[in-house]
Image (cartoon, rainbow over the protein chains, first blue to last red):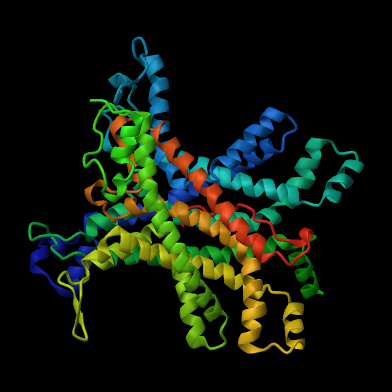
Length: 292
Length: 277
């Protein structure tokens, strides 16, 4: 990257460390932190949307719809989430290829043949000739969808509970004013629900942060992947030979997560205070008393 | 060569702890094989879960008390312990612990003339158990600490009015009430600790001679057959069963802890999500 770093074997001390930490591979490592943040930035709203839909459907007055919503909520309970992660990534991939196979392959044969999953080369997603970038992007997309499905169920559970926690009297008053069911939902239930949902959602956000290293299991080149790659001992054949430093790299990741969760915790506390303003809860009452 | 299902159970039922057939099935996979091997792997999930919870319970009590201490020399370390283990992913904790344990001198350590062998610490049965033990202790300590804080003031005043102070007040009033208030949340912790045991063989700790847990074998079958639709639902089935058993056992304890209360004021156990740590 820099002039001085042209011959790493000839330098030492601080210069060596500076050159080492700015090598091309390390820059990739730093970018992979953005991968984690990107995953969070996409997954959190997606899961919130899935969860909101799930909770609304579970509250439906139409029995099959309500059963569907409840099954979705109950789906992720009782079963370790990592199983869903391992399952959905393959299942989604095979599902996509199966559907594509129906359209682009001749005959569209049943692909699960004995010990193989076989579709014609044109039906592969992404195509074998695509660049490495597309393979990575596809893996990342599968991970996002999987995270959104699994966390959506957890969010749905929280929101379902929060909707039930809004005092009945509030809704009945709205009905007495002649609001339709949709109006009550939109104007009364949803705005009041958030303060009840926030503790649960905050908890889920922390859990989501701590779930991001699982990207590694899904085959995405994330921070865990690079920590293992870069930390592993390097012989003299490498530009920057060193012993087994994986411990230090993982220590770095640990600190990253600790700082991240701590900041989130502070943010959530502030948000709770803000949302409690003017609410008919103990928190809201405390704020009112403090102001008076 | 095809086996009957009973023969398969005899060959692979204890495969995960090294008893029975040495080679895993390589072709002609049957549902029976998948059920047997994945079930065999469940032995490890039980091993990690039961031992970590048992030891963790005691450490959690100690840490909850330490967090409540007035002396900052005792309180601060406990707070940091809980913060580090609750604030970082279990997955990273496993990796970190493995790398740290690998760095222990291979030949062993000599302390006070006693030779300590260290190679076993990098094995999953010891290293991963240690991480799970510390992790569950931190999460449970937070639960018990919260419960300790929410003991009704009236209960404590009543205890003092009866002349109970110090250790006696703690062991007769505070501790049982803490357990009772914290128990529903602690039940969730137990369930999700069992779930967390599935991470062990995906996080640095190698499985020797293909002796792994339920998810390890499910993953093996999914890789070999390219069909995730059979092995993963099987593990899911086993874990739903395990969850029901844990809920039942902890429910019995909960009933015992609440036995003195009128039926309508007893705390019920509700499943709350606590995904990956």
